[in-house]
Structure formats: C-alpha cells, structure tokens
Image 1 (cartoon, rainbow, N blue to C red):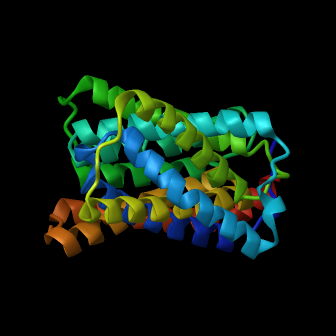
Image 2 (image 1 turned 60 degrees about the vertical axis):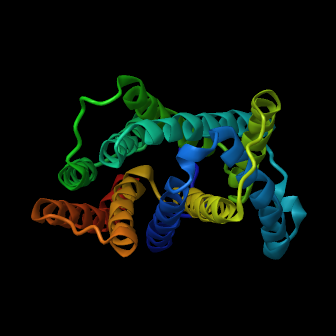
Length: 292
C-alpha cells in the first residue's frame, strides 16, 4: 500500500534538503544545553512553545480544521513512536561522541527503505540501494566512529532509528490527514508524556541564555520535521532516504562556523560520496515511473 498525495520529485527533494538543514540547526542548538537539563523538560518546553505555532500555521494554510485527524489511533501510535525515538536518541547523544551518534543514526535510511519494500511493497531498484550504500560509506568516512563506547547508548540510538522508521511507515497509511497534523500530534503526545515525567521528577529553572537556544532548536527541529513529512508524501522512500545524508554537510558547515572545526581529507572524500549519493538519487525518478 503506497499512499502518495501526488508524485512530485523536485518538490520532495527540496523539502528533504531544507528539512534536514533545519534539523541540523536544531541539533547544534540543542547540543549546547542538552546535558544540563532533563530530556522531559526540554521536550516539554518545545511542546508548549511550538503547539501554538502550528495552530497559527493551520489558520494560515486554511483553517483549524486542518488539525483534525481521520486516524486518531494511528496518530497516537505514531506520536508515541516518535516521542520514544526522541527520548532514547537524545540519551544516546548525551552519552556518545557526536561522530559515533551520527554514524549510528544513519541506519534509518536502510530501515525505512527495507520497511517500505516489505511492508508498503514499494519497489526499490538496484540503483536506489546503491545510492543509499554509497551515502552510508560517505558518512563512515566523515564521522570515523569507534564502536567501543557505551553499549547501552549505542543500542538506544539504533532503537531510536527503528522507532523513527516505524513512525514514517505508519504515516504512509494516513493519506487523508494534512501534513501539519503529524508534527502537531507528535508535539501533543511528547508534551503530555513529558508533563507526567516532570510531575514526578520536577522542573529545573532555566536561565535565558539556555532557554533561547532550547526553544530555537525546537522550532527549527519541528518545522524541519514538517518539511520531511511533506517530502515523504510526495515521492517513494527510496528516493528521499539518501537526502538524509545532506544533514552531515549542514552539520559540518555549522561546526566550522561555531567552533572552527576543519574537515580532514578523508572527511572531504566522505562528503563527496554523500553529495554523489544524493544527486544520484534524483536520477531514479524515471526508473521508478517505469516500475509503477
């Protein structure tokens, strides 16, 4: 079962690249405060700030009715999956070097493509698998991870990828919902779960210099997710998954701007492979049309 609104490869590619840019900015901002506060507190703040923004966005797009879901149970399941992915993924980010976390996090393209192939029955041509593998090799060269770190954190990042892939697959079975519904109900679910946790664990006062990057990160992250949800609805998953690798390009540029980190020659080769995989993916639309 494949549920595209209408296939639009150029727009899907643009949404994917822009979405991962926003998420990269959000992750960099989050990293500055992540270790000082509980994950529940951070996600709670994102929810109370971003939910009103999505209400305003729905009014701008046509009305509050756009937030009405035709699949309340699936939205709940998807919201829980993405909230779990966020919690355990951020736990891994706290306890692992960024290189290891990034490398492990890029398992999700494989998981999403496999799930789309076996569950949604989407046909992924050999060229599609090649572009994903080439991009993954590029990530390995850029991050050069070591797998001798905290095993629990490593498993958390891998499990986070599984939950994220499951969330994307569930979303594909909800064609009648507007794309704005997905981040809205994710925020609502995350906010409710975080509220319950904070009732028992308490809230740590947050100064302005920590509050601003926290809220900024949430705004970038969830609007980035909105773009990704739109991208996944406009083209097959095998076309979109290699674009996830462009996130490393944005993170590399941001790291240089903030910390003057200069990539090595090996990392530059890795970036070349990432770009190659992404561009190669854009040429697969004709083959996919033939398969359909």
